[in-house]
Image: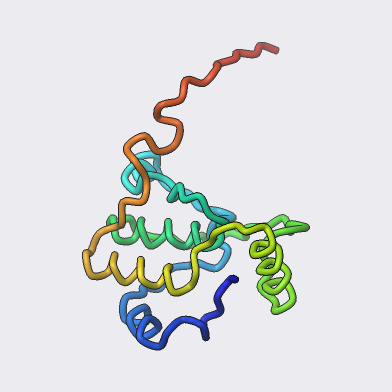
Length: 148
């Protein structure tokens, strides 16, 4: 089940409060832009066989502890509303939790997320989630060229 903040043990909440930095983690995966070198420095999104909730926030903490700064855009950014996926209201959280639990899909709990952030803070470094062949490093992809 997707844990709520209240479900995170008080000890973890206190550690997370001390370890946290002010990063924009609210729907941050909808628009995450980094230089190519920075994507390689953090080794991309963690490639975990789980439901993707918290993956985008985890990436931002990895970037922060790799020394990559966050910039705020002053321009308006528009978001296309998704028909499905995470909705921050109580009903939306319940529906998503029921679906993920019913499908038997593993996920990062709030407590696990907090533990990883605290560990990064203590080490002053991002955690290495991916193998050396992350992304499609070992894949041979077909290349197609189109002309108009």
